[in-house]
Image (cartoon, rainbow, N blue to C red; front, side, top):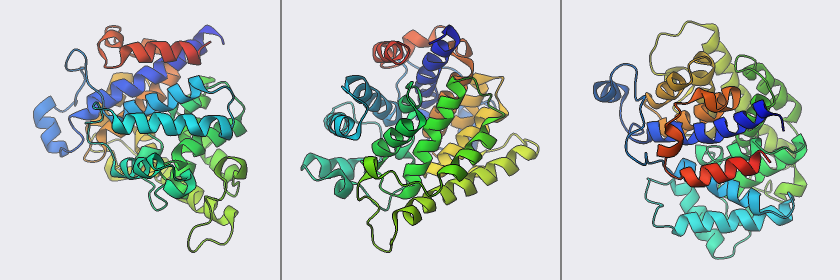
Length: 334
């Protein structure tokens, strides 16, 4: 892997954690409350030593460790490792950062040994499906494997087709940026990818997950998810075509509690502030929606575009789980 790509991998992984830390204390505040606390520019400095993150980073680390431990990147090899890592997270005393109920319920079923296709929360497309998928996009694998891994890690907890599709799109975005795509080019790249994948159901990775009430065909099942993602990307395109009024980006692309909105709003922050990485994070954290997840994904995107040079140098030692981030960044750049 050439040096610029190595820097992008590290920049993305650390950027996710930085955005998560900046959004941690703003997630349940209104924009007015955030501005009163941090000023109109929003949170721009890591607080604490270490600066604490949320379950977004914790679960991204769980996915990353499962990928690192896998003897092969196949569904049979990766699923048990993802299950084990998710269950370790669920039982950890550090899992005290307002974790999502979808993940907790699914982990409760996984802990009983239930097949993941039955343990998953089939009606949930929460952003917990794609807030943790960045490590998949950092792998040097073919796009079919990337898609399968992204959807599998989502499907263990979030069985809704939009959770699957948004996770693949998020991983694909990270991969495209890692490989040299620019942030302004990304929305069109994602629309093209979604259109190509719209009726592709990955049986080898998902098994019979599609067999849910009211669904008669696997292609129909997955197309529902891609269509919702395409609608979110259309809102993103419209927002980027207009002027930036400096207000809450959630008003244009959604509050981010669900997967396709988290992706679109994070992209809005990243693309509008493509040349000012810290502002992209601060903008994501200054929202009335799921601020930590939006800022985390914005950080993953901007970091993949610019590398570690995007971030203040001292942040790398001050962020929580710095040791794990360092070790995993080396794995993904080997």
